[in-house]
Length: 324
Ligand code: ACO
Image (cartoon, rainbow, N blue to C red; front, side, top):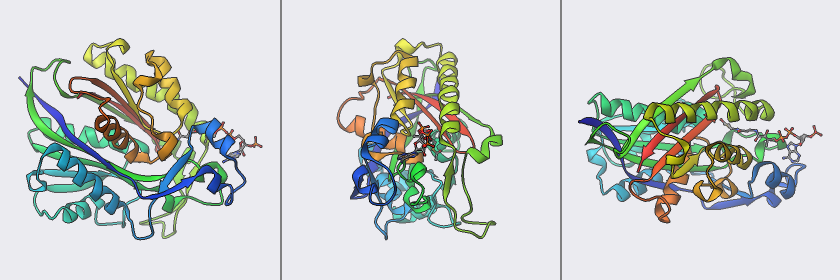
């Protein structure tokens, strides 16, 4: 017998406002062609002025709990992966908890930028395996539109707003890769790469409002190498091969990066869940949003083996292998 973290529900939420590439051409010197060719992005959602990260996260949380058939009062832990919290403190997770109308259990944020959801899954899985929590909500929610420099064409075209969430429940398994639930997570960081992707200010000690700064090529170069390593680590830890994977649900930053991961796994693109074309990069929200979409439309079925990978500012990166 082995304790497993089963994913028993998922849900997503996107703000209503759609901003197309063409719309951005009126703000910066860019083109629909350039954005599509370099990134695969066609449009993104942008939160309304009164929609903060907690509001998006709360909607996704409600959808995931509904899908799981679980009441918020049953949650022992609420995690929110975000780099765009409503406030410096308290944690956005506590605002989501309040929005759900509950006052029990623990709630805190996880900050690992685009790897935030993989980090959040890791924390959730660890709490479950340590017997510290039975039911855990992991939310990825972001409003990157608020930290973009809308005069910088090299970054403002790449991101969007949104939220996704999963509900995790402790269950007994047999300890092999046939178990349903999180089979493994692998997370990494190398803080020496700060300058390649950071926000130049923001909440806390800097006392300035920050904007996202990125050396795109440098991030790209590391992303393809590091995520491939994390994928290999996941397969090796479970004694599996690329041929065992049913679905790749990658972080959605750039279609070219996603395609290169699929090639490495020898997976045809119809086995890869892609949302970057419609959502752009929603950072910690991108993976749970993609998961929710593919579960809702029936692509992902119970028993399917899902490879999840991400890379983000820090640098941080990681993978999770989940049997649905
Ligand atoms: N429209 C038109 N031209 C542009 C734009 C734009 N929006 N942005 C940049 N350009 C120009 C550049 O100025 C440059 O022009 P130059 O040659 O005259 O100097 C040219 O296009 C090429 O720019 P590059 O930056 O070299 O383009 P590249 O092919 O590397 O693509 C991109 C840029 C899309 C950002 C790519 O590097 C990338 O996707 N990097 C990875 C980003 C990523 O994965 N982030 C994930 C983590 S995000 C997180 O954690 C928050």
